[in-house]
Image 1: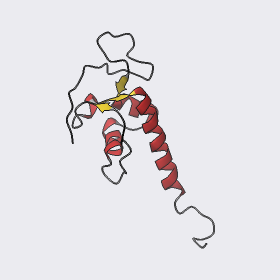
Image 2: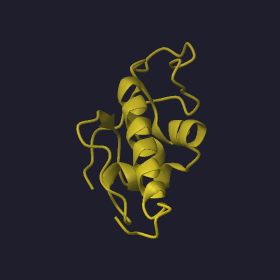
Image 3: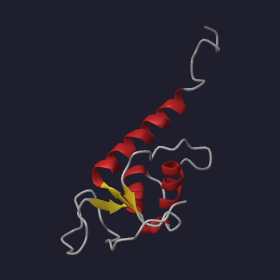
Image 4: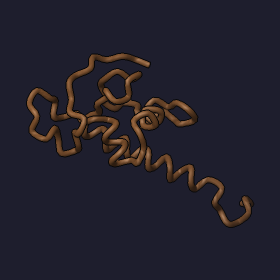
Amino acid sequence: MSKITVIPFPWYATLKGTNGRKGFNPEYINFGGFCLNEMNMQAQSGMYVFEGLHHYPPLGYHLRIIGDMENYHSVLIHKEDALKFKARYEAYIKRINSVGRNTDGGKK
């Protein structure tokens, strides 16, 4: 896991920004809060998906993220990339849910 300089952030940051707090980068939101509110998973699980750990494919490639990857709660993700990450995750879930659900008994 790589370490990147952590910047200060509000724990309650959302896609709407930093709720008026000064000194924060308004382009980045809290990764854990996004995962919990938008993807129904905790920060640790979100990081597994992002980095491709524990049977997940790496869905975070080419996305902007900053923070200490070993401290899930310190991680921030760019607003635009958060939406891309969510779309990738939803596509992955849709794909794995469709496997083996054909009605022809597996015959083609």
